[in-house]
Length: 209
Image 1 (spheres, rainbow, N blue to C red):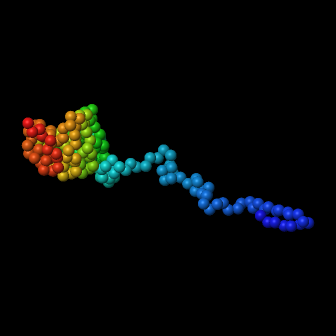
Image 2 (cartoon, rainbow, N blue to C red):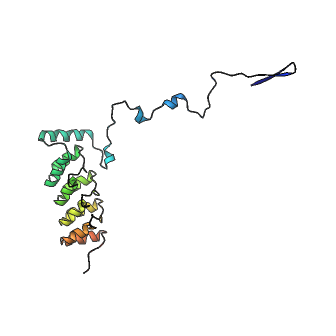
Image 3 (cartoon, rainbow, N blue to C red):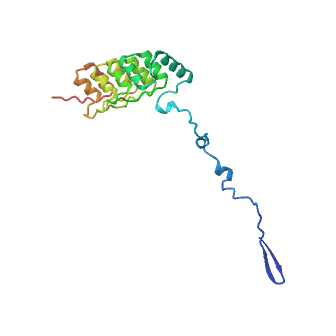
């Protein structure tokens, strides 16, 4: 704004400048319209899933493709049900192929058993190791609140129990009856498993009658 005094009166001339610069603290129109990387993705195009989000290691695309081809050639469905079946049978080769093919490791059946349950209950230690190394969740529970470790312990599979504990499985989870894996082993008189679990941090909750 500029002021001029003419004939004793004050004449105020106000100049409005069009196209003046905006406040530098305000975002420019290009900044306001900028999209996040997710918004900028072409519509209808999904980003490739990150397999590490499911807890497992990222699978090399070439390895995954080769595994899928081998499974298709053998007539094996690329599905979690196939992995549960392979784990139940203790079939390490097929289990590894299905793991590499990218099937869901933790999908549960009607009894809420994942592949890890079948492998652990059957004492298939190498399959258990393969599943855990691939990221299978050892904290998954069935409809009675048992973990796979409960079943391995109750069946007396010391080698499998050892592999699970060394692999990071929780030692003292409770089922819906309040039983821990150690108590499951004790109930079925699996003394070597009881001793191992207590030595590795399980609380000794045996009744002293």
